[in-house]
Image 1 (cartoon, rainbow, N blue to C red):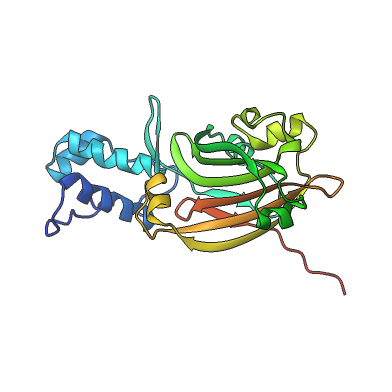
Image 2 (cartoon, rainbow, N blue to C red; image 1 turned 30 degrees about the vertical axis):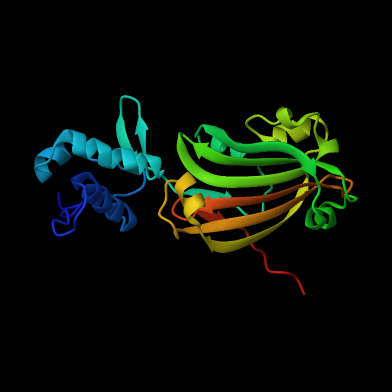
Length: 244
């Protein structure tokens, strides 16, 4: 298939990995475009002279990376990159639902603790104050999209188990949802552990947002570090020229 290109027959390794690389390169080069359907498995198998099992394994790897999505009864499509507004305060769950995708989380840690000296300064809490910490993988349509680490003062929630799909929903239920935030964005390279959780190669590029959320009365109710996949996210902001 001209749009996919040729398989690298010189490189060692399983055949499905070579097809996976060819498909991934075609997506990166925009030879396969957003919302375009992948050719049928049987057509790819026939054109490359390989088995459908090999094709399916290659496509499964793309699904795990969030580069393609399967639609029941319709086929497999190139996933759209997600645009997240950097000037609007919204939760991951809200962002995904607004784009017609299904958010979910896998908990890595959810625990009670006491504030660290650094957290004490950021949250405005005294030494020994209780906090809740949340560490999870955020998914959209079963594709891992981000790693999220949050610390919240214990007085903001009824318990550490109060947080289900959305931290902001749990904070809203107690009247402690942030209404404004300070955010800082910077580029990072994923560690081997982080990359493994997001089904990426170690050293893959990512985007880190560090956020400090404030209640209406100015009380800090959240500090969060969110590590987003660099191959799936674009951050956008509307800018206006200031009047002299």
